[in-house]
Length: 345
Image 1 (cartoon, rainbow, N blue to C red):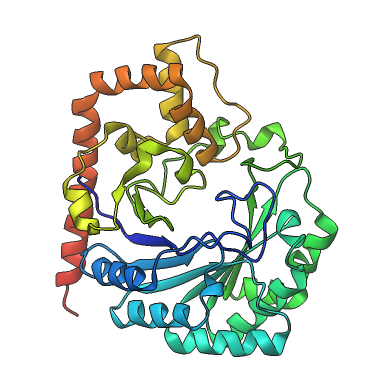
Image 2 (cartoon, rainbow, N blue to C red):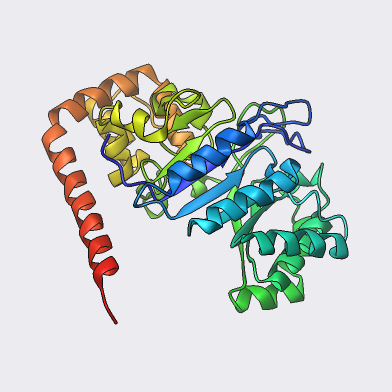
């Protein structure tokens, strides 16, 4: 399989201190499935041998439930020259002092970036004040912070303003030490009502884009499946699963996997554009206009039998063009990388 991945996303566990409605992986405190410690160590070793790999992301579930083990993995990746990122709900930041101690240890291990997930659905389990504590502590330690705050019609903006209108966080945001961004919360296997305004539809021309993760990010699930992206619905789309790593290496799986033209096309033009081409092939196909996230559109494309069948016909007709565009892009990436690596100043 011809890929130049820049990131390895380790979904270390499905265990989480929260059980948020519509959690993309349906994580909860009751689930204990995880990637074994020795396997995480092995995967990081493999990552550093992939020339294009730059970053290892530790996520879940809740990766901080790994305790000291998480710091060991961060230190290992850092030793190999890989950038490290953790994604967390911030449950551990029960006070500013406690958060400072935890971030000091993470910084000493080499952590470069931490992402906090919060919003109305998370706040049922983790008070938003803990996000404030964790953000301040991480920024003080010199760790770059991203706050991903859910947005949907059901968002409680009064609570969200504890973050959005905090003067210290605004100051840090303006100094580019943290990034605060709103991310759409999408339906999964939850029960709560969830909706978005029409202007968030991914089929609005201003919202369409190429997919930034498929074939760029490789993910490993707690059951040790290798996935071709880090999308929110990755565990629901069998076609994204490349193989199991329990008894295989990443490179072995990639070498034994054929190029997939549909994934390549989504990588190049984005899943919404691909879906539109399916509709051109079969005008009876209805577009999922309520989709507000590319992962929603992607799930619909793969699960809609008519759309999937239609797009396979289009892909087959355009095989040469798709592969030529992809090879040109890959060649340019290789050229840019070689030039940068051989520059002398």
